[in-house]
Image (cartoon, rainbow, N blue to C red; front, side):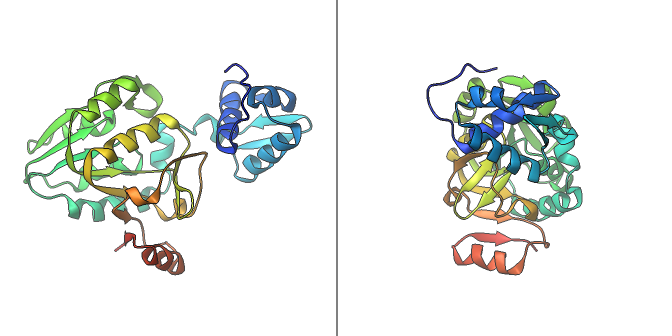
Length: 261
């Protein structure tokens, strides 16, 4: 566990710390969370109530119990299985924006895992990725010049992260980056469950001409724990047909290129 800090933690960080504690053990006491997060008991109770409402834990008298979802919160296979049909649909749309001789970043988000299925096997392109799962598929494409980012391998996520990965990304410049997020809203921008994933998203966005955010409608106007980038970094938001029309209109009125058909 992290040592207690003298600084008050943000709501996003507190929730991540709570889930991290539950990832390591089956139950936690409120008093232990208070020490870990350097927050008041009232604040922690409020956090636990919100996390229970979202289905991440079960509240108990004096603490919380792990739910199955907490075990798999950061795992690649768990994320890929969520809203699979929508993710495939989104990747099919996104593939239309990949052109001959493009140099593209593709990050390791679960939605992006379906993109190789729709990438043309005739037009030559260069793909730079930190995803081991994507690399294992694209290595069989004769038309793809594949560059795998180096760094620390995270087994559960089937991807490469860390400081070295970030420095590797800075070596390249792409026409486009295709990325995902755990949540997006007009106020909070892009949010994530994990800082490591967020840092890769930012690096790829900073080193590309255009950013394509692939995001199923369940994540739109939803905030995750870590707010890491303004919505202005996104040039195209590609989602599915289930998005509420009024919500789609709000995004379009905010000068966001929203594509869902």
